[in-house]
Image (cartoon, rainbow, N blue to C red; front, top):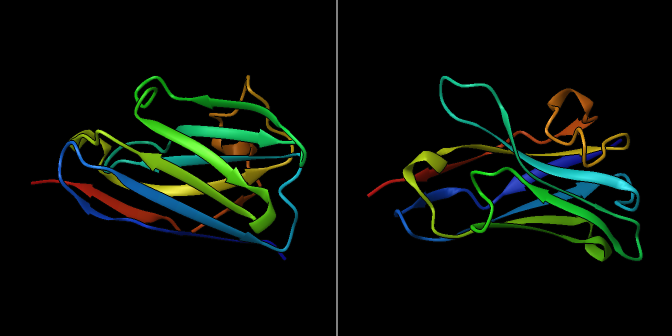
Length: 129
């Protein structure tokens, strides 16, 4: 059984940085697409970033326009971990952040949440003074 657990959320000041971690157990990350989504209060869940690794090499990595240049997604396949490094945080980044994994996701449809098979419970990030 696959388990996805996010951690690292908290309160951050505008302009600050935070790294979220996602630990995945019960499966290998090779040839899986891993993504971070977020849900801002009152809005639909939206894709933030996604990555796919073959187990030997990075296949692709992509970002939503509103985080490009500020966020970095990376994978540690040896330890079954996925990270979201967030810099220059804005108040608009306040949300619950979710880690997701899917076998049938590619660069053209990575932002479609319904394609992902496994999800974590989410971790709250609040950007505030």
